[in-house]
Length: 326
Image 1 (tube, one colour):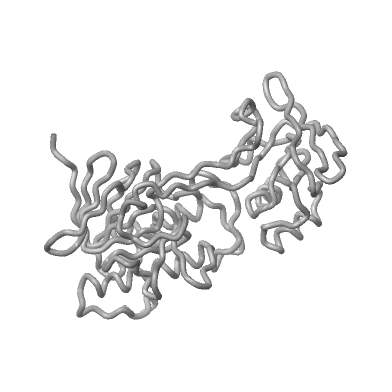
Image 2 (image 1 turned 90 degrees about the vertical axis):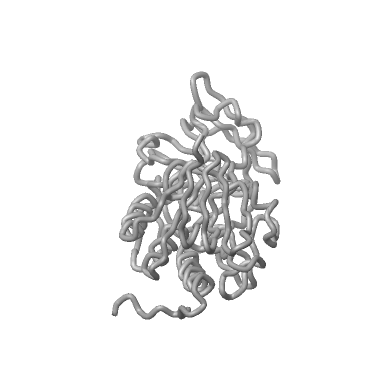
């Protein structure tokens, strides 16, 4: 059996927004790339979880759907023909005696690279379950909404108080018949502007409120909620529940590499380099003082990482390549 092998200048682990932009920028710097991801298509969590959700914090776009952003990034990177190694989880990272690295995937494919950029795509992420909701998963209870149209003219209950919960409320307001959002506290983890938009909308927001039980025969028909301060209960007639309770991530094989990890994140310096010489990181997976986890920040980190990786690969290269506008 012949092992599939690719030899490139830069191996990018993770095909989300930061990884795709890194592939473009590496091509701009004259570097060849391979992009590895455990998911079967480019886009990372954006494609897998919210392709139709509007994203508001990408520079130059007042609002853009997740999948449209990914399609644009794939087209942008495509100018330089990156090699895609999709549906492959990066398992092993070995430093080579003559320099560079060898990455092996769980399917046996090998990628030899002079430098490595980690932007995700290694472990798995799973939604935090709604207690006692397992029976209705796929029968009205969902953790994300890949297609907004499935909520057309339904009464929807959204559970959660973070960005995802409020984003779903905003995106579904013109699709669903009615929306109720409940949260177990009166403080939210979502962006203040989004919270205010929801508060000013037709969405009913109930604080200090939790799910008591879900009922229905063939699917969700009603949900009884309770106030966790007064125990007052109310039964809501809904046909769909969106449990936006966040996700648990597992970095998997990365934890066995020699890279310094803090919880679920990789420590980097101002060059976006890890403690391993020649291994860089960018995007949500990175950690440093003052870190802000936004797609727009990930783009900047990807460019910084690629430019410093270019110098690692060729010490005579310059960190700053000049402006792309000429």
